[in-house]
Image (cartoon, rainbow, N blue to C red; front, side, top):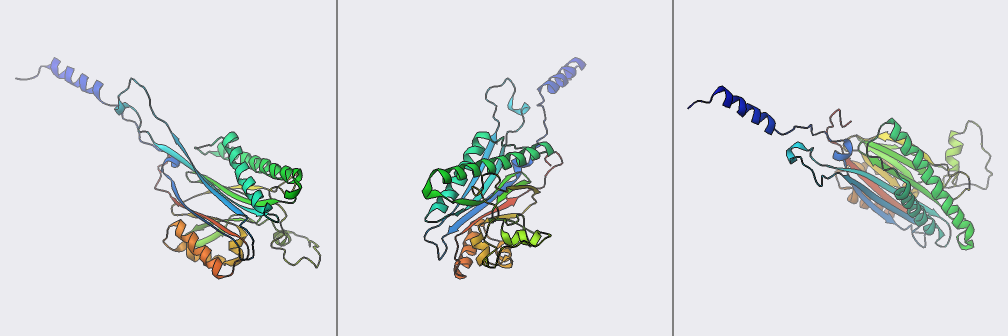
Length: 313
């Protein structure tokens, strides 16, 4: 029995109609880039309490089809997108007020970001500019909150905080900074400091003119020119935009670590094939062995960036 031309035509027509709509499985970089974090904080040997605090967040975004007349084969494969945020705060103040400043800085920054943040998951030049502008605004409002609290309650007078944070979406990394906590990037065996300390020593180093500071000031590396909550007008926040590649490690730390552990030692630890949490332990152990005097806090993120398509980039 052979099919007639009409039957063959009907079969081909039905096959064409029944064929699923093939959509390209294109995923943005935020859907494929992943970060693994580790963190640890250690009270300084000469400190009565630990005035450092830290926070790591992950923001997830997913689109699900609830009701549709389409078959599943006609729909794009659902995926989740992730953005990551991390911040370290070094509180400044006496008798526990530094810890209050660090807690208030992180808590206020997070609350403001959740309330007013746009949480961009697709970064282009326009959204990158928006992230930078909004980050500056969030830092200034956080600084205002600490400044007002310190002047409203006499026992909290003079408190402030060095605050350094990151926000990453896919391969885009934004670093916001005020004070002398630092952000480093470790890539291909090289450790690069992404932030510049807001200290009197750094100001003297970059100034084209001599800055008189008086002979009584010896420790210029710990005298801050900017900090969150220290000034009613300008916390001196700097926000910069970088691009991540596979196996990058980003290190946030307070100055307790960098005062006690040399950068070449930090680079050696980050070069080891260990999980970020274990690298944090090793670095803190090195700081303790070197009699770290100030509180030391570390957050390390290691990024996995698979080969991305042109569309994802």
